[in-house]
Image 1: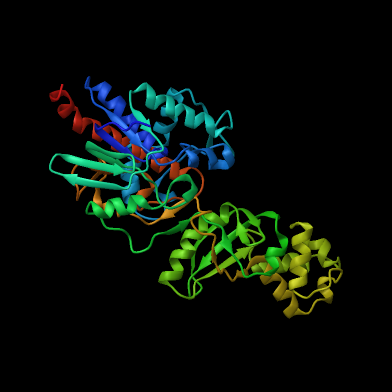
Image 2: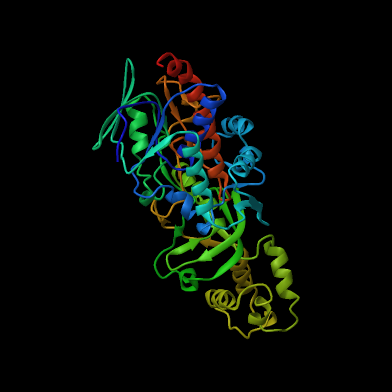
Length: 425
């Protein structure tokens, strides 16, 4: 491992956003007929860990339709960025690299090879093709701003750079290298952080022994609804839902997790409700049960739900499995209906950054120029990807943010250093 003594553009972090920034910077220099050096530093022994594990190892590159509505915060800023580099631009970029994407029923776009390695290898080749360098493992421990630019340092020594692009990620999946160091770098260079930095797209935990944990391994299509202290419906997601030995996971759970964790801080008394029959109301469900015409309740529930779940719900309602609705007291029937469409979940917590797919919080987006991703507090520094306070739902939206901001940051950094690079030749 040899780290150059100096470079024009230093990219700290070689994940999705960092690799995109390196390609974008290199292409911009070529397009301007300029020369300049680009070096990406990463502390990981294996590059692109998050890319490789995304989408079950297939890498959900983006979504066929990406708008600001898919993100939890800072939507006007997201809209501004997506106008510069949206899903169409991402598809064209990867097509140019030889990575053909396919659209699945969910709207997610995956490589036709169904292999995340295809995506990572294409990015690494593209970095090499534009003449940029990746040095790893080379963990950065400090970034200092001086009169002549930046000094980036680590156990490997130090390097001078005219410009720095911070693409360190957040804190999710720390084994991939995202350990929160980027936040400390940003603070040391004059930035602030949001009051809370927490896991997002994270599985949720229930009390030990809760009846749902006994259904571990069961996957159903269900709806999760977050209600405020007054019962107001705040947000909801209907999707695949996985019961586990610790609680709940699956797309619907991951999507609602950041809203639940955020609301609990702001609005004590917020509750999470699970509807095992998405789209059905209590009245409609009660009418369906009453129309069962003397059949046993287990047989009726099995028309709509898996047998394991049907048995568990009847047990919770303290109803005999062969009892008919006509044999069921009105209050017991109401209890059954409530379990079917409004099971209240006593969520204890979450599985933490180790199992989270993304980070909520970070450097406030209003501290960067959205047209260039350059810091408004530290000239020459750019920020992109997860280190910024933007997070989206599951489905490729967080990757889209990484591609978009990495592209903008890389292009702008190259345009800024091109005159400097030429004058030094």
